[in-house]
Length: 313
Image (cartoon, rainbow, N blue to C red; front, side, top):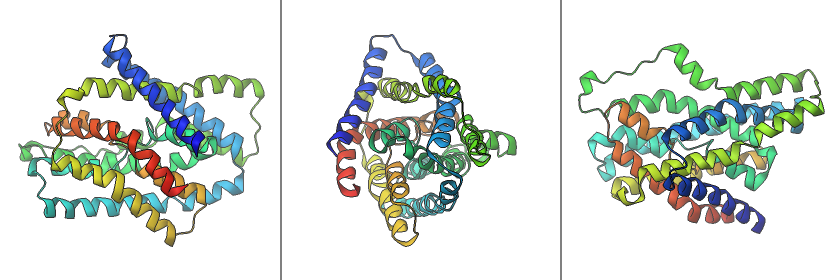
């Protein structure tokens, strides 16, 4: 337990370094975008490929697939609860779509993956990916639709659900790295040591670059610009109370391996998806609300995660 806390602390030290170097103008938004691409298109696919080939057999993979039902049901239920929460606590009408999306969808890669690696090690990565697949699918379909509906010019707010762009979001390089690794496992292919070593160099970039990106985002949001209100409190309740509680309850009903359930609970209790402020700006929705919710969720996470670990470990 103590080692997990220490590992998480150093994860947030990386985020602080990213924040500090952005303040020092070593990093910028453009560098943050480059880091994001490095993680999502190079480092993370290598990480996924190595993890599935090193740690899983064919029979163990078959246990993975059935577990996807928990994140799917939990996220759909959380979306429904967010609509009820809006009515009860009178969420500002122009924020309803952003509110529901942030209430439901979590930051499964840039924070979720490093935190799960720090707590559980490499065997958690495939479970992280399973939650990521469901989270990404819901975010880029239901989430983007409801964010667009927040546009004051609702009759002009359109959402393009063309199949190819959606498939590109879902079948990301990370997922392709996982699928290639899975094929290698299914045909009993052994990765040569030299190739595995090379891929590990790239895979090891995932955690530091991910946390640098979060540090850059928090700096650019601006801590002084964060405004706390009842709508943001609602987002925090959804992220850190209701989402993990629903996953835990489903885990008592649907039998999955203990590690899988623990990873799903951690993944469900992540800060706000870092793409939400960008989408809010694109659809002329409430970008300040989205940025403030993201900032508060990240800053509160360091105090929240030890409590969550005490409850589930």
